Image 1 (cartoon, one colour):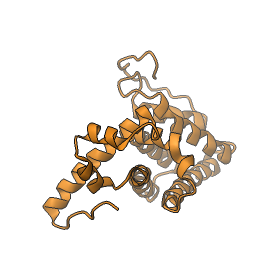
Image 2: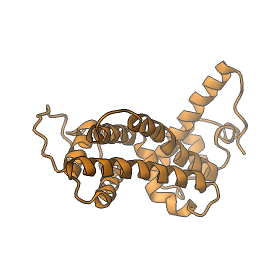
Image 3: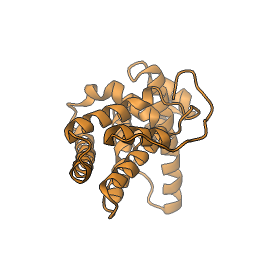
Image 4: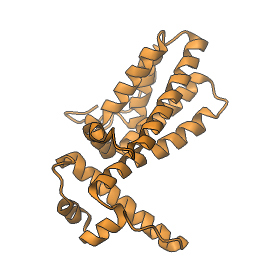
Length: 215
């Protein structure tokens, strides 16, 4: 088990900041080398911590992986709940939620790549139950708002198919998204929503730096 964090506010702030850096760095290493292709020595080298210091923040490699998965969902769920608690019309809620989702993809891109690579390997772990429930909750939120968009305007015609399509589009985005590419995360989110609700965007956006492999 990792050492419990300190209770004094200033020390806890420093602990949380350092642990976040460990998680971000580890996610990038896992995404580039693969979870099984990364050793604890690789993580020691990447984070600049001694082995004992690394253990202090994450415990072992398996616990680190589950920590990455948990952190992937916690902030997204919090944002989604706040968005769906508003009085905005369903389509506006959908667009706001997908924009927040895509911004989350940009921030946690390496986490999502690792998740897609490794989730099957931990699906039966008892510790995975929390993450699995988080994912179900988020999927239910998306399904609910799509159903309400359908009830108000008739599109998408099949909310369940729209749910699977939207999940597939956003979840695959980390494989190709380039923060310096032609479209920003928010512009991609708007494009996804246009496809889902059957609209064609009329706005024009200034082109960003082009990438040969990313939108």
